[in-house]
Structures are given as C-alpha cells and as structure tokens.
Image 1 (cartoon, rainbow, N blue to C red):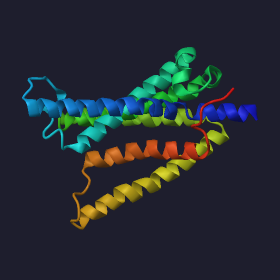
Image 2 (image 1 turned 120 degrees about the vertical axis):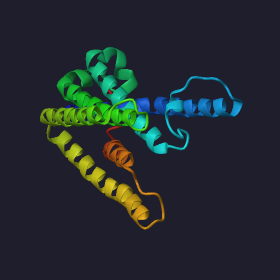
Image 3 (image 1 turned 90 degrees about the horizontal axis):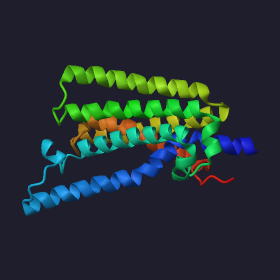
Image 4 (image 1 turned 90 degrees about the vertical axis):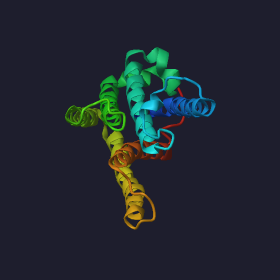
Length: 230
C-alpha cells in the first residue's frame, strides 16, 4: 500500500509544479496588463513589451499563448530542479523528498517534454505578432522543440509503471474529447458566422491547455493532487 501511495505522489510531480506556478504567473500577467492600461490612461512613459504587440490588450490569443509558454517552461524547470534539490523544493510541490528521489529519470524526461513544448509555443509568439523571428527559423525551431517535447514524453512513458501509464492514457483520452468539444465547437461557431473562428495560434493554445486541464482533472479524480502524507 505504501508503494502505491509513493507512486501516486510521483506521477503528478510535473502537474504539481504547474499548479504551484499558475497563481503567480496569472497574477503577473494581470499586473502587467493593469500597468499597461494605467500607462495608456495616464500617458506614462513606461517601456513595455506590450508596445511590441498590435492591440495587445485585446489580443487574447497572444496573451493566452504566452501564458501557456511560461507555465510549461517554468513547470519543467521547477520539476527538473526538484530532482536536483528535492529537500529544498518538495514543500512547494507538496510531496516528500523520497517521492522525488525514487524515480528522478521519470521527472527529468517529463521536464524535458514540458520545456520543449513551452519553447515551441513561445517561438510562435515571438515570430507573430512580435516579429522578432523570421518565418523559416521559427518553423525549424518549432519543429525541433515539438520533437523534443514528444521525445521527452516517450522517454518518460518508458519509465512509468502500469498505474502511471493508465493515468496518462486516461488523461490523453480526456484531452482528445476536450479538444473536440472546445476547439471543434469554436470552429463550428466560426464556420456558421456566429463568432470569430480560431486562428492557428488559438488551436495551438487549445491543444497545449487541454493537456494541462485533462491531466489535472484525471489526477484530481484519482486523489493524486491531495497533499502528500507520510
């Protein structure tokens, strides 16, 4: 029974990292938007990254994509650092140090996958609408980072036991249906002229966000996001 509890704690380390970082990232974005609004209203001369984006305060596609890139990258970095310094970071992730030390390779590869996927969506934002990257280099980097993300996930899959594979398979299935419901529903509304249809960056954000949502939902249903107990 103790072994099962340990594996349940291990299986959600990366999701715990995203869960721990999400409030801070969202608050940071809200604060940034608030500063930008105040700057425009008060004519403050504040340098801002928002100035590089066309209609930044209404371009939610860019904001959501950038937010997802940050969450993926920081979650991957936090999970990777946790395997190096479990004694210092285990409290932030609500797990015991032993849970992290038991299968470090699993979480290192999951961290590689998360960072790769985060960088993939990040380069898209840098290319358009920021115009900081040329199209061909962006395409090459996007393909490489997606490949890195897939490779990391495949390697982490090889480190999983049957319980973890079952949880991941359930999350993948749920994610597929969520993509069909939300992405497909949005596309149908756009096709019928009832709303603006999703652009390419919107589809990428839907794919990336549904991975997080389905993972959190599946693990929460199984009680895997509860605080770890000794």
